Image (cartoon, rainbow, N blue to C red; front, side, top):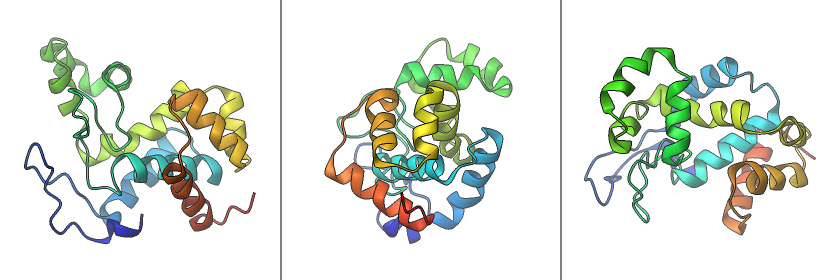
Length: 176
């Protein structure tokens, strides 16, 4: 994430909050998340890192501001139904989630801290993607990554998205 070295002038447009973190802050949380959710292959890790880089504008945003979908966020910009599933997988958040009463903005607020927000992509890959998709990512192939984007994340492959995938593969030494 080339621009994630610093967070100068990164106030979010609609909230005025500074959601930005730098790579040095993110790395320990990502390593922990990869271990917790058993994301052990460089291909899976590269896919998650590229997803985070694109969706968070290189760690600048933690909440969706463009177009501003209420309840959408984390570093991979999960939609509210996935936020609810993610929270349900974290026993320590059950009481707070119950107190939120289904309010998507309050639920999102439970997972915006660095630990949970950065772990959301690893959780998603480990719990929402099929074994076939994970095997394709493990191979580090472009076809496997494209299946992840279209078949698991549920969006389209774009040049910008692919650019982050290529950079993440290079950073992790993947030559496939």
